Image (cartoon, rainbow, N blue to C red; front, side):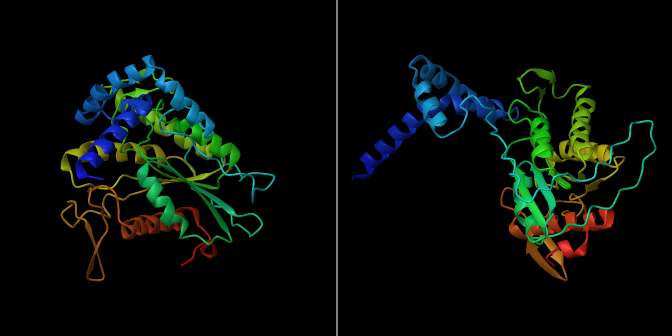
Length: 332
C-alpha cells in the first residue's frame, strides 16, 4: 500500500477511535491536574464527546465495555481487584486500635510471624510509583511465607476521589484481604481540588483550608488501615529533576510524616534524602561503593529497576527496625 494511503488509513482509524471513546477520554482528562495539558485535552474532547452522544455512538462503546465485564460509567481510574480467600485464615491480623488525640502514643508492635499455612499478607497501594515499587518489593519476600498484592493505580491519589476512591478501596482491601502490612506510596497527583467520590469540590487547591483538609484525608486513609489490624509503611515522595515541583512534594511529605509518626504500628519511610546528592540536589545516579548506577527514569520522576530495588530495600529496612519483621520472610 502506498505511504499516502497508509497515512490516510491511520488518520481515519484514529478519528473513529476518538469518536468511539471520546466520553471515556474526556472523563480521564477531567481527573488530570490543572494545567495546559488538561485544558487542551478538554477543549478537543468535549465537542467530540458531545457529537458522539448525539449520534448515540456512546451506546455502542458502552455495550462493548459491558460485554467485557466492565462498567462504562465507572470512575476512569478503574477499580481494584481484591485477592480471593486463598491462604486466608478464619480470623484476620490482631487489631491494634489507633489512639485518640488525648491518648498517649505507644510504640509499634511486632508484626506477626507467618507460617506456610498462614502467610504474611502484604498489600502495596498508591499511584504509578507504588505500581513500580510493588513489583520489586514482592521480590524481597519469600513466596512460601509472604503473599503480596500489588494494587498501584496510575494517576490516582487522595484528592480526586471521583477519579479513584482510595478510601473505599482501602476498606475493600481490609475486608477482603485482611492485610498484615500496607505499604503506601502516593501523593504526586494530589495537587488538585479535593473532590468527593460524587465529583463535588470540597476544598479548592491553593486555598488556606487545603493543607488541613488534605491532612485529614491522609489521616483517614491511615486509620482505615491500622484500625483493620494492619501495620502501615508510608513511603514519601522522591526528589525530582523539576525544581519547581519541590515545594509541593515536600509539603506532601511533611503531611505524611506528621500524620504517620504518632500512629502506633505506622512508620514513615523517607526517599527524598536517599536519592538526592550531597548538595541536596537531584541526581539520576546513586553512588555505592564508589560506583555510580542510573536509578531514575528519563522523565526525572520514576525509577529504573535499580531505583525501585533501592526503595524496596529501604522499606524492608524500616519494617525490620520498626516492626521487627522476621528475617526468615526475606529472600536475602
